[in-house]
Length: 243
Image (cartoon, rainbow, N blue to C red; front, top):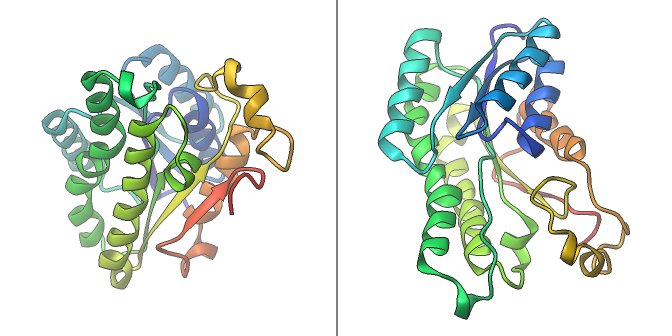
């Protein structure tokens, strides 16, 4: 597996960090990505190198289309195309819809949904030209499946990711490149709002929040050879919050 490199966007902390560490443990080399948390990403890089795996860090804003494309293409020109891509980077700007500033709508859509195009469009043909199996995993959310109060922008972006993922899966299936989506529920990260935690737990049959490692385990499976016949799927990791 040493010739298989996976790009994980938004991997300096939270779910993205857990995914990067899990995949490194599985034997993949990792291209880490961050927007502003360079020191955190470099710490993850050192943890991966300590496992005996290769790692490097790319820093850019996934909402910046031109820079994203340029840096990704430069990286694969220098090191070869990736085996897999995990599109995890995202932000939340929660507010009741009537009070939501336009800039909060734009920021969430540009970062969470436009990044699907910005990251994957420049990488799709290089993945195809590898003429080998490949893996793409996107991260949506339970909010993109059921909607969530105060998250009209976030729900719209995450629902869009599901639709885009399914469509791209159809286009790439004959190339042996699987495209799947993982939709976490309430996961213990810095993005969890403690003010709504108690109320949210009432909606979760498992009566607890999930751990980043539990999301990472699903991504790990989808990245592996055993998942070669699984594509165009949305797998929820939400403790039974929604079916």
